[in-house]
Image 1 (tube, one colour):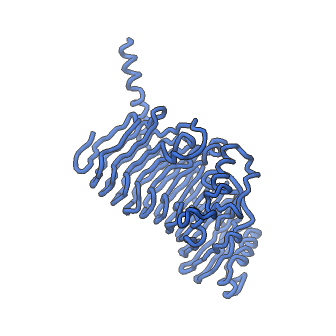
Image 2 (cartoon, helix red, strand yellow; image 1 turned 180 degrees about the vertical axis):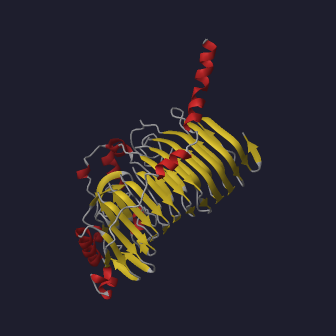
Image 3 (cartoon, one colour; image 1 turned 45 degrees about the vertical axis):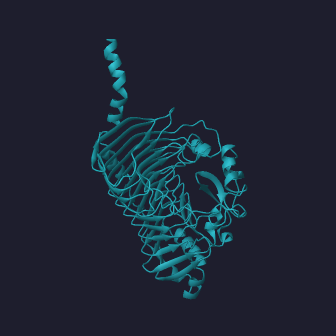
Length: 460
């Protein structure tokens, strides 16, 4: 009897792992049933009805503000920006039931004067709540909103303005986010649980705004538009649900120019998009450290499909601000290829950030070249971070199947913790070519390789 009990206990983790990974794509089909486009009235508001061409070219913001106000009071509708080049000297603030439509050959160039993005608004900055410069396009507690069309929103960020705040061009410059009065101060406030209403940043603090942020909102569509040269992250829905990001391009090689960062969001579809970025292409997040644990809102039910990833630190990324956890992410039918793209799938955290990341499913991905690893799972991210190391992350129930690649440093690079090993990973029907180094795998249990080839040799 003891012998049989021993066998059962020995195989129990394997049994549980295989059960949780069975036929996960049925779950994806269920998620899609809960994602739908926003319902916005059919009324049309033309921006040309609110100002003449000369005024619009000089500064479209006053006319946009009037159109948004009138559209909102009437119950909502579509605001059309026609072909032309327009300057926008400040942020666009959304109200509910509005579709901001940018027609083909319409280009909106945003001001790079930080004072134009004051007064401060309630936001999240690298996973921490605060009051900071307004995102270039911002909506708080709105619903049924859309940004559509075929035009271009250009943040005009460069090393001469917003990007220099990172200190990339001149690390000795006091005007950087690493100034003790900026990023370190915000993170210290988070570690010390300073009330959010006292976390006032903005002028004098050098925290760059995101391009688009819908905060605590629902029923969101972003479709067809190209976004260029963001001060920081491009598309950043936070604490929001029912989101569609479709056929969008994000192009910008500035520091922290992530393409799309759904944070603490539920029921998200990202499809047909093109990412050419200075940082992660898609990075799923859920709050940083104490804020992430206090708010306790995971990112969940996220579907990524038919996207193209060019440059970036990672194609599909989870973390690093992942303290609230993440579950049920599905990525399929994507193409990734660039010597400036580091990884296909990347999950990252550390013992300060923690977070449970589970049920991650990736299939049918075509990778040309990446510079680091096809799959990198890293529990040692940002080893110099300051804070209590009391929150070991958990990565578990991950499946990667039908992935091909032509060139990489590693196929698999798993960096788990002794006290919290990576659990239940399946790599199935994959063919990794041009791999320079052997797999680097530490502190990982229940790893299954099934019909996996590395440089033509089958690995089991």
